[in-house]
Length: 440
Length: 66
Image (cartoon, rainbow over all chains, first blue to last red; front, side, top):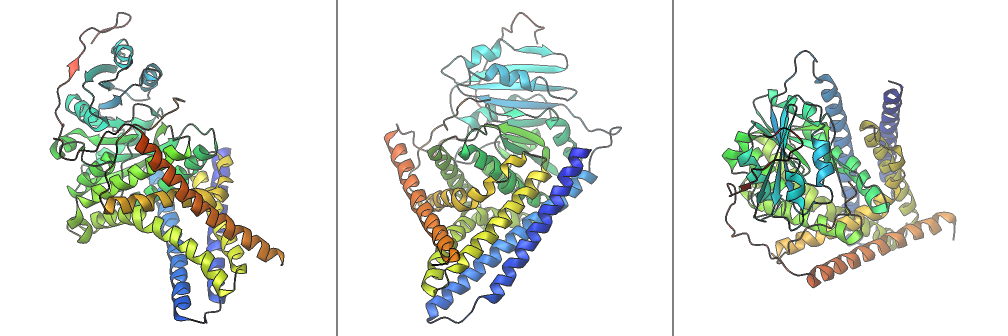
């Protein structure tokens, strides 16, 4: 109770600081002299003001909707006498996970849920993954562990095999190298009481917080990805069910043909398939998958490059849905939000900051850079505080918000920009598994 | 030069250097990928929804079989 009260206090302080920073930014904008020597300088400053307005609007929308979702999820918490706990199959695609498969399976067998099965699909591993997993095969109380093997054809193929072999009406698809929190199933399955809900997106957290890059990613997952997903959940426009944790009605997946292999982001592609088929997608922050983030810069860039091109490929398959609200406003907003976050926002962020830096120098008002940077940093730190408090996460991540704006986001956004350009020109892609350190 | 201008200059330089390093890192990543053996993306590959699998009939001995 005391800990939770403390987090709520931080939440309110964070919100107050965010609003103060936003107010200060508006005041700064009003005080900038708006008379410049040439038309192009005026045009540049106008673009910068537009950028600032977009930054402020984005923050306000995400924080406010996220907070409303937080309140909504507290109200919706289950009545302990009226639980909805249907049987579920957990599908674990495993490729060369021999070093960690034992511990992964044992952690899945210890979830807090009445009856479920764990189905390990060995995707043609060249190591001893299959031998180790099948040695554990059997029944453990009300939990059943099954292991199957198939020829190597990638994660999507392994998940599809699992979906076709699942014995229960609900399936949880995850990564072979992720772990689930104990109450994941209880928290997620309750949403399927609503017959219109086709899938539930879970909450992904970085587990290997060992160096600057992974701590920055841990903060990014909490402040960036989860805050956005929480806001989308309140607006009923969740547009990505993350690969490490997605829970589905099995018959929906079977009707839609499961995962496809023609994009680099099979999770984004499947999400759009579900949305455009008319199903609702919920977000459950208590259904947590702990996953390993790339530990080096180049692997991080590789991951973001694939995500960006994969999302663009998934959107490209549904151009008609992107341009016109065919399936209702919610679907249209979901697709366009995805497009905005994948291309528009990274481009605006890099070019906007660059234009601001150069513009202030040319216009002879470099001292505004300091104000600008300080306010953006205060805003980021406050937003980080707010998001970290909301998830009752490690407060030690908050100081990384300073590096987050200055270095991390710019580095990632530059990679996203290049990935978008390469996707536009259909540059050939290569396929490969991300290097994992095996920390789980 | 007052403190304000010094700090502003540091921020601008840090930002521009970050952008340059980000572009450099991206080039480095592309170079690394080019050196690795290629497994080219093939969108024409057929959908593999229902695929053959090879169940293992022999469960372990130390607990109850299915």
